[in-house]
Length: 130
Image (cartoon, rainbow, N blue to C red; front, side):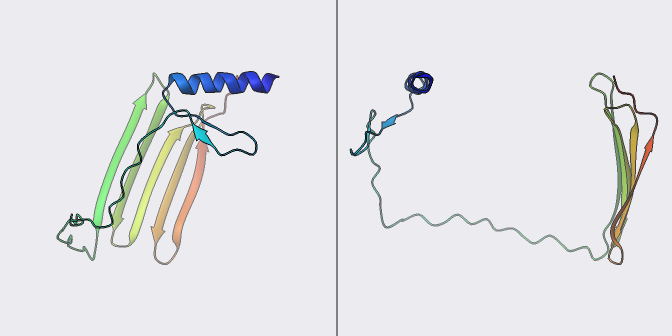
């Protein structure tokens, strides 16, 4: 009985939202309460496919960059910082963030062709649980 109420409520919501409802009776073909025209299918398309042509960007054989950013939003408690630098195939960086328990997570990381990605995680401060 509860399922029928749920089903009727769902059908009412779908009708008020303008969605078609397909009803299936046992041993009968399905029919729809809304009838929509079936779009015609055209075999040939006279429109050329869209292709974007871009000049390839120059390849930097020795990429080099460094960046740093930080967020200190005391209203939301979102406090974090990151620095990273790259020189060729070697990347070094650090990020820190204030955890929900009040401690700070600090991650120092490096990545290179020889060692892959390496990260060392430290925690500072004391965890406070309510």
